[in-house]
Image (cartoon, rainbow, N blue to C red; front, side, top):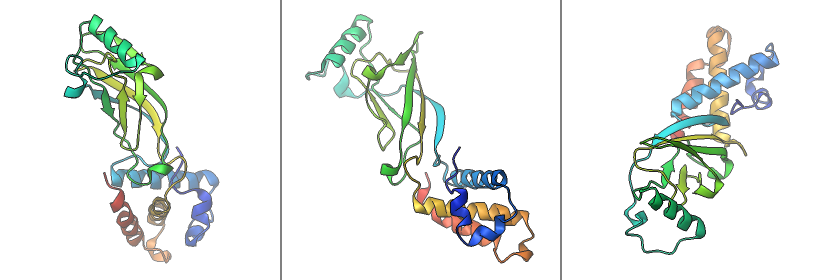
Length: 214
């Protein structure tokens, strides 16, 4: 895991005196702890991560029923719907939304390594290839499957992916992580022997993070 605030960023400001005796590993551990506290406060992942999450395939868009949708389709959609009809299934789910998505500044966020495994409600599983994922994940966490992909209602959809503020970390998150990490350090020291008030540091961090809440 990469912390929201780097060691260089932390030591470049007024908190450098707090970690003057810290080893590189000790400082990195504190910065990671500060990052986790920020994420726990917001109820979401912010730093780069890799995770697996599971959803149940629920809900059908009426416009996507094979018997009702009188619309032109590309070759992938035509073949997929033909395959689904041959297997006796037309009530198919073609959307899923990931839990983790950029709350702000989506241009700094990046998804990668997305793999989708469908475990059907009445048996059998399938890893969906690139030809069966029409689009996504986008800035809302939405993934759209190609029309006709065999995902019956009630199936399990397991998505493994990486994401987070990979391209750049917004400055406000860097600041919040810096304050939260300083709070951790000062709490380990005697607050009376330092000019940094740990309670004020934590309050400042939470004030910034309020805009990033889920």
